Length: 364
Image (cartoon, rainbow, N blue to C red; front, side, top):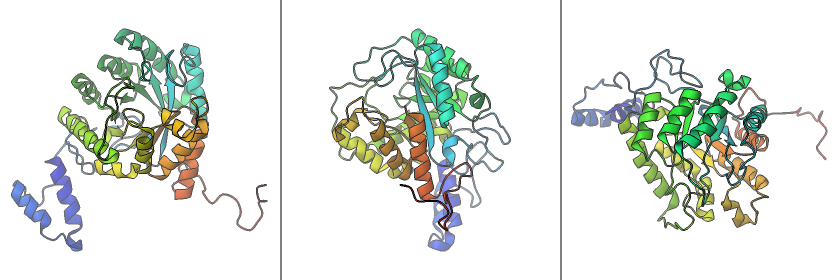
C-alpha cells in the first residue's frame, strides 16, 4: 500500500502529461481517499513499507531523513562511492594474509582513508572458489577487533567514512554492528531469515547481492535467458523478503554479484547494462576488483589492477552508486574522472580544471 500511495503522488504530479484520472481510478479501486499519501512511518520517495528513522533523528550513519521523509544522506547518495576491501583472512583470492595481523589491518584502513574511500569493507571469511568455511566464533574473532580498531581512525570516528562487514552469518553481523560497523554486506542476498531480522532490528544499510552459492562453487554453470533481466528479477524477490522483514528500502543496496555464477561475458554485460538496475529503485554496488572475469582480456591474477580501474571508470560512467575495490587510490581516481566527465564531481571540485586561455602548458 505504501508503494501504491507513492505511485499516486507521482501520477498526480503528472496529471497534465496525459495521466488525468489515472490516479483517481487507482485510488478508487484500492479504496483510498483522493488525497491519501504515505502514512506515518512510510517513505514518500522510496515507497518502502519499512520504518525509517524518525524526523530529526541524526543517528543514521552518513546523514538523516529530513522532515519531508527524504532518504538518509549516505556517501553513495551523491555520485559513485568507493568501498575499500579490507580482508582480515589468510586465504582471500587477492589480498589473503595482507591484513591478517591487527596492526596491518589498521595501517591498511588508514591508507584507504587517505586515498579517499567512503566505506571500509571488513571481511573475515573468503568466498573464493574452494575456500574453507570459517566458524562463527573464528569469524567474529577476526572482524570485531578490526572494526573496533578501525573506528579509531579519525575520518571513521567523525562519520566521514563508514565501516561495512562482509559476512553471510547473522551472529557475525550482529557482533560487528555492536563493535561499530555501519553497513552489512551479505553475499547471500539475505537468504538467512535470521540475517534479515538482524538488519531490520539495527535499521542499518545492507548490501543484497545476487549469488547462487557462497563460497563460489566452480562446478556450478547456470544458464540465463538474459543475465541482466534474470538477476534483476531474482534481486526483486530478495527485496520483497527484505520488505516483509521490515527492512527500510531506502537503506538497501543491490549487487549483481559479478563472479558469483556468471561467466566473464555475463559479468561484462552486467557492467555495461548496470543502468537497468535502476528499475529496482535502489543504489547499485559493483564488485569486480581483480576477479577472474579479467582473464577474458588476457590478464593474469597478478596483473589485473589496470583492468579493474578501467572497469571502475566504465561502471561509474554507467551509473554505479558504489564500487568495491582493493586498490583504493587508483580506483578513486577513476571514479573522480568519470564524475568530472559527467559533470558530477563531488566535494566542490572544479571539473573545468586549468585556464582556457592557454596559461597552462599542454601535457607532453
